[in-house]
Amino acid sequence: LSRAGYSQNSILRLHPSFAGIEYEAGVTSFLDCLAEDLVDLKSESLLQKRVIFVVGATGSGRTTLASKLAASLKDSNPRKEVALASLSATLNETDTKLRSYARLLNIPVSQITKDMPVQQFDKITDFDMMVVDVTMPAEDAVERVSQLKQQLGEQDSAVVLSLSGGSSAKMIKLTVEQFASLAPTVG
Figure (cartoon, one colour):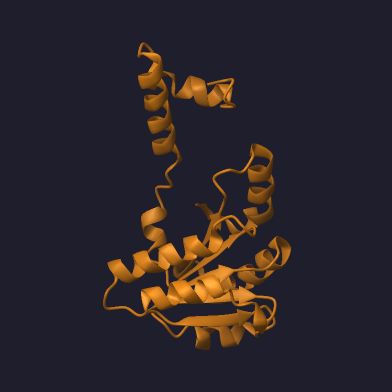
């Protein structure tokens, strides 16, 4: 486990899960306990928010995660209108992938630019629930999402940070630090 890059603290903390078990079963048990340990206990409340912002680097699976969240919201709230949106620097940047997902889910898709006045955001979010794919660079995304969260209020909004499964420890640390002020749930 040490050679695989797990910290000594994680190994010691989860030691009871694999101690005295054969190698393969021990590794599986360790990974199961680690996965359970990493689950955010607040993730269920995330799906109760009116607006969920999905942030992350290009190629991290952000758009796919936003679409999966919208699909989950639609399934668990059949009487509510769920929508997808793209928050980008300009009007021309709406991802065709996001539009395709919206078409498949049969839900509306909106486009929001970073220059749109915060007060107008309420008009665009005239849906019961909305998942916003934030396609701006990290610094701009943090600034804009912070403003919009302040307008919406903590009880109505949440942020999910999309991290690629193949990211190095250094990349994960950098990305988490970039978006730390938004207090995101990591996906």
